[in-house]
Length: 359
Image 1 (tube, one colour):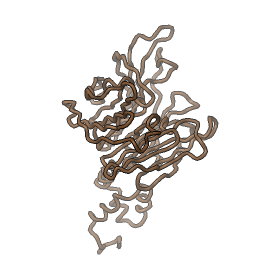
Image 2 (cartoon, helix red, strand yellow; image 1 turned 60 degrees about the horizontal axis):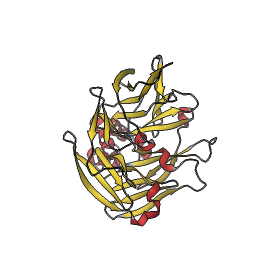
Image 3 (cartoon, rainbow, N blue to C red; image 1 turned 120 degrees about the horizontal axis):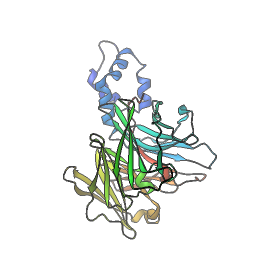
Image 4 (tube, helix red, strand yellow; image 1 turned 90 degrees about the horizontal axis):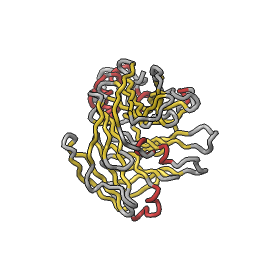
């Protein structure tokens, strides 16, 4: 293929081909010639590439062999397999708290209260400025109940959210739920005060979903979805299908599905996938029902992590599995060889590669 005038293909064809490359190959392609560099730098291509990446959901997992060892981060891709990546460019020991549209929110382990938002593929990051200190703190143990990351690919901005029950020093918590929102566009924090009476499991905290300009968390009782609308800075509750209940042997998880909300309900023998077809009317529909007979022994310790309309990633204590929804075939994508201090599902997050600068 020629890069200068008289090329074999029109620019649009070249763009469509390049938009399907892995992002690391894409950066190498920018150095091939001036034409490719110009095409790959245009807003049209960035938008097209990010739209394509939405269809290729992956899983990011932290693997720690011991409490003192440096954790290893792996990315599990259905088509490209497993690859390691590093967050060493942060020059800190961190844990991943949230993921959204190619960005990761990381918290410093040794320096409490220090947070980063980074793109692990481009190795760009932003150190989130500390908010002004006040005479209150998160309860318990100074840790926020909820951490969220909302990355708007069209506006090219992101919001970082810390929310939790607060108490003033010397007083008991009074049920006040305080939320701090950092906006990358203004580089400022804002504060939202409300009253909530919810609890959350580790997985419901991890699986925060950003759609329709809002962040969504499934409550620990799986009775409803707690929604933070970032456009109006208000909290509200979203109802779930009546059939979704967490009785004995039944669990529910909140995931994204092709740009919308999805509930995955797991019982002893079946996994039912619900999709929110009408966001305003809160109309949920069953889109798939999957038999778990082939992995019966893994069911008690299996957790869905990310999905598309074509496949579903799940994690167990030592494995990452993918389920092909059309062929109804299960496949092991990754297995811990030497053991891990924590189950893989404990630190697994949905991920996708995007061209997004967080600086």
